[in-house]
Image (cartoon, rainbow, N blue to C red; front, side, top):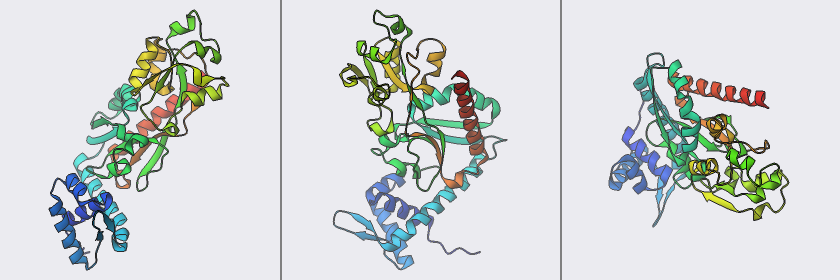
Length: 322
């Protein structure tokens, strides 16, 4: 079949400009000038015989033809990129390059401590792991959100959010259980933690990394579930980094409410303890997200299956402990 397609550079310029609704931001993404983007789109419109954008005094808007064209162009570019990536990566058996972006705490506290098992099973895969706050949906809304996943090379994302990622394949890994944790010293303190109401004698440690309360469990949620009266009056310490909140709990500064899977090592070696078994399940979760065209890559399939196996092992251990 002979394909009568416009130049790929023009299609890339259209897709970026339509996604950003800005020639300037499209130019920044493509590392060209806004004038070059404008010329590419003008040539595309002339070749198609239709206008794709309405150029307003201080804004850019898609015409009906542009709106109809954007989803298919995006899908096609994703397919092109994924095909190139599969050729570049080769098969999983012979090795391959795998790029993963994950939330910082998930990457450092859940994923990295397990990677030795992944490399034991797939020694030929070259994993490139990046941690970024933009992999958290609330933070991503301030840094590009889903649009950020469409630029550059095809990548796997592990995202923390409600799981709505139009145009991508997503699969729930787990919804974390938030549990109070503290230094074991607080269990033997002058005013020990024996029941939830004893929290009034201690500081509550808050992790404010994700400002949006609906994207995480909060102390207010836990105190309500535990029927603790006047919980809002309990003094607190606030951190904008989960590592700092966990470190403060280890040092005995108070009681932190954290996703239990992120403090497995500290609970196992006794640096942290759980004064109360009651936990609350987050309404959102960690999702494996990818462009559809990337899903058939052998390296991606290997990583996905390994991740799900790790999650299943954790779930089995939690059931056995409970």
